[in-house]
Length: 412
Image (cartoon, rainbow, N blue to C red):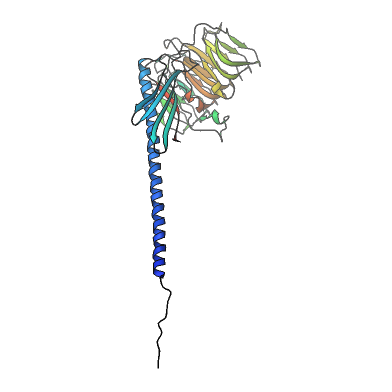
């Protein structure tokens, strides 16, 4: 007789599998919920952080609006409610400018957010000047001003040459904040040149930047320009500065090969007269006002006369600001001249000063003059670190802004 037996397989496996699948799905769901919650909080934090940034911006613009009404104002406001948060603003004076028009603005803002507070701070200096040191070289006089046919006895025809860069010259840029000029490691293409009149660039010259002219641009054979070229552009204005009428420090006369150093401070000289190979170095921030009148017996009206191979300034060039005649009518001008092999570490501001730079010179900074002539082989390396430097002024019409900012979430 045949018998049959039912095979007994393990029982309850389906339940275990269902429980495992449920646990996995539950874990995945919790993970998705956590991720979603975290992403939501990140979004809320970012929104609150941006909101705090905008509140600080609003505080800055409110302060500027008040300064436009009263440029001498210094004040402080705290915990002013606005847009779901609060802001505080402190306006204080900035030392170092004769006109005392610059103001330091510190704006802080707070916006509550789950688990903490979003905070932002903006620190900025505002003043009533458009910073002039954004040019490697610029000639401020417009076309139509009469020039001498021969300048400095070198036989250069200056007719309709407001800015002239001689043959085989180079204009580029660097940032002294990153070290000394290096044509490979610390060199850039912000060497912009311009004039309110004509710009003439002689043959085989390399301009690594823009050229802007109020009238025409003339180029010789072999000229290369990395940036843009704009002729008939709008006139560039500069603040009027009075160097002063009293030469408190007399005059500065350096004989052949002599070296002198100026410590940090502000100096007022009637004129500078340096012989071959003389050097003036600086230790710390130095501003030199050249007040005039011109060098005795100099019929050309020079207030700065530098012979060959003179060095003026020290690295970095941001330490030296040389301010010559920058006021008066166009016909009331002074002259600055440097012989061949001149080395200049600094900024020259002379909006009513005719500037002549001799052959094979090197400029590490910025040149702004009534007219600017640079002889053959001159190299101008615009120092980008100068673009935030100011020139004292008395124009209440507008404010320029420099800033630094931070924002973060502060836990409760």
